[in-house]
Structures are given as C-alpha cells and as structure tokens.
Length: 160
Image 1 (cartoon, rainbow, N blue to C red):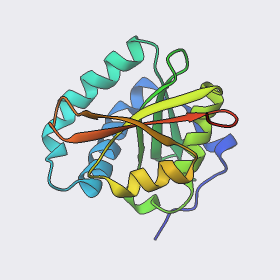
Image 2 (cartoon, rainbow, N blue to C red):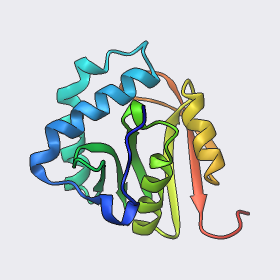
Image 3 (cartoon, rainbow, N blue to C red):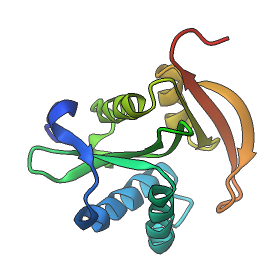
C-alpha cells in the first residue's frame, strides 16, 4: 500500500547529513526493484562516495518524507549545469506522484533546463521522463555497468 505523503511544499527539503544511511537504503531498494539484474547492494559504498562527490561539486540533494518523517524519495540536481544525477523513490511509493513532486523540486532549482542520463533498459523511467516533457538528445554508456544509456533533456518553454 502506498504511503500517505505530505504535499511537496511541506515534505521536501535538503538532505541532512544524519539522513545519509536512510537515503542509501532507499537508493538500493529503488534501483534493485527497477533493475534486478544488477547487485545494487554491492554498490552501497560506491553510492555514498558518488553522492558526496556530487554534492561537493555543486549538486543539491532534496529529500521527500512521508507523514512519519521517513525518507521516501530524493532528487540530486546541479542548478549551474542543469544536470539531474539521481531521482529515486521507494518502490512502495511508485505511482503515487512522488517522482513528479521531486522533479518539480529539481525544476525549481534549475528552472531553465534539466539534462539526465537514463538506462536504456529502464523503460518505466524513460516513459516517466517523456510524460514529464523530456526528449531524447543522445546515447551513451554507463561507465559503471557498461549498459547503454539515453541522454534526455527538458527545457522551459517550447523545444526546438
């Protein structure tokens, strides 16, 4: 059963250092459900280091919380480069609108544009980003997994 979530205005805020472990747990659970062929449990330490590096480089991590104050999703975005590096929602909140709320937070931080790479083998995510107005702009390869990725972009206003 999906959790009852607060509105984005009252449930989203920047990540506190004390919430890192819970955020990593959520990241593992979300990605393990989305792509079970990859052992995300084995990537916990990598993700901790990766997130620290992103934040040291100007990325901001905004977390969403349920009514009990438990992290149920997060987005990591760099307002200067417009790069969205992570968007994860706990699997029991999939379909609740939470990912759209987090994407709205990313757009608030980077209102002109957002760009991201999404795994080609993650059709659920691709459909989500397309519904949210992102268009495919290129292809690549994930350096960690070797899987193909799609570059997607959203821009404020009409796309050319």
